[in-house]
Length: 554
Picture 1 (cartoon, rainbow, N blue to C red):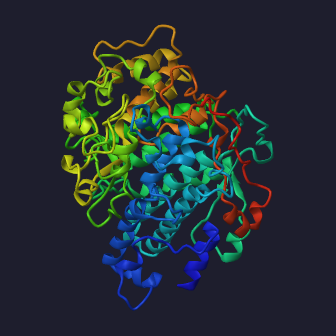
Picture 2: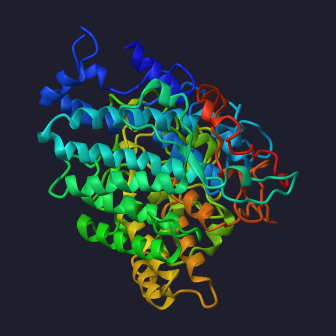
Picture 3: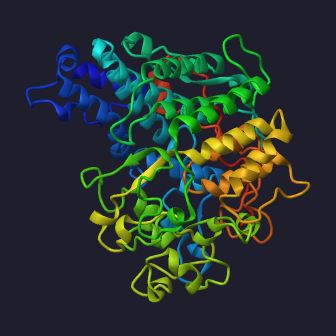
């Protein structure tokens, strides 16, 4: 056990014990050996189920209420992107500071994202704990020929984690309005690859992988998963399927499409975009999933809290995995959760995005309009008119608040019931929009009907606006489709798109009224100083700190 603790400490830069469920599966006599686990089908089931469980139960002790594993990370990504922010402060009595992702919301007024900042370990520690769980599973399943499908699942999980890290930590050029910001010294570097079976000495001198090395590694895992999972059907949707493997490949190729550099082992540019479109279509076909309907989207009891057929992959919570009243996705993202921060912060959408959504687009219905018309929003919220006005609740509900995410069963006050929800990890709609965008980069004529067909399921009478940049229009529709789901940051970063929350008329809260010239520097995450101190190969190889590189308008 001491060796395991040391292994984890080297990966994370501090002695944080792996917080998964592997050990809890076995008797109190101690840690089971690899051989013991490999011989027990029940134990192997426990190792397999530990991976989706750690996603929703991991806690890395940064003393913040968004510290609840991967859902908390998705919330952080959307706030980094400026796509989700609290709107409560725009009404008397409202308080924007109920939104706890403040370091991500206000990067111009806080050094929390710096290498020695208090939230810098949040992504890094979580991902490497997830990787550790996957590596343990890969080691164990590799010992048993009958565990081939489980081995494929573990490799799919590991590729998922590294794909996220590659996109978050790859330092792409960005402009600064204040001072300078230069990533040339670390250009093309991602994060260290911790493989199964690595020694302490290797981990303590483990350099950042280049983009080519990282994606070669990711595709090795995904290729293996594709082969091993050819006849695999997961028992529950919190485990990946073959369609999800195709979806992960589509995400990976889409990212590589944004680069002009030529690599021997992996495609970039147009070749990568063609592969992204190919695998997005494979994911659609393999999943057999229908697109989320209007009724499913708008259901105020089950909307975006219950696994439905369009969800290819999901995080599924139970009463056992809800950590407490506030360490929960629903407590932060649902204004129906009167017990939580969601009712107080009121996560909302940019007024500029809201105004651009077509009037016939049913997705617009889940946002409170500028006139705060309760009758218009009442079919999509469980709040009464009095609660909507702040009576026996945190505050009046402000314009542009989102009622996309609902509590379990519409429960408003009992957190032990209301927090038990599911959260999407991959929906089939993402694959349709990846296919459309990727195609647009090399064949706009073929891409237009793909977008038109998708939008026919969203907005009656939709037609692609004349004169609009096709890729930008697709990304806008993706921003609306996946508002609040932590998807869009990677696209904005890849395409060098600007934040526009500092424009006149913004509804962003004070200190978050930021407009950038292209991608924001803080979209290049920094490795926490504690991890740099543990791994000598990282010395002098961190991404530059990006806070204070812009100023908020207010």
